[in-house]
Length: 184
Image (cartoon, rainbow, N blue to C red):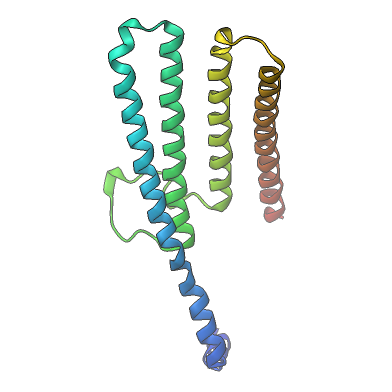
């Protein structure tokens, strides 16, 4: 141990300065996380706008229309949840640990989601959002006149959703195999 510490003190000052600069560069991510906070505010505004737009109309809406509105609100909520996960986990993994005690309000996953877990939560959220969008499209299909353009859109929505699902399964498989390799 002493030999290693001695090697650190003999390190070239230019190299040490460069490494400190590289380490400090992680703070360039901080404005991006601040931008995500603003994006979260934008999602909250859109959520409230949708809620207040449709709430007065609820007594005149068909049940299918109410379900579509609810799916839209769920979609926005999932996107906001995803944003919070990326915001907190990304900041703690790549910039700095949170230096305050949130007590019982601190989400259990905070500080425990590593990059691999973040990827899995990200793809799971994307798959859920894609599934909700596909379900909303299916529910609105009765009001659409069949055409080649509609068929093409339906085809691509399904293909994109299946691509997200396959990507999620492959990422989970890669993480599983990587965790097994690390144990050996």
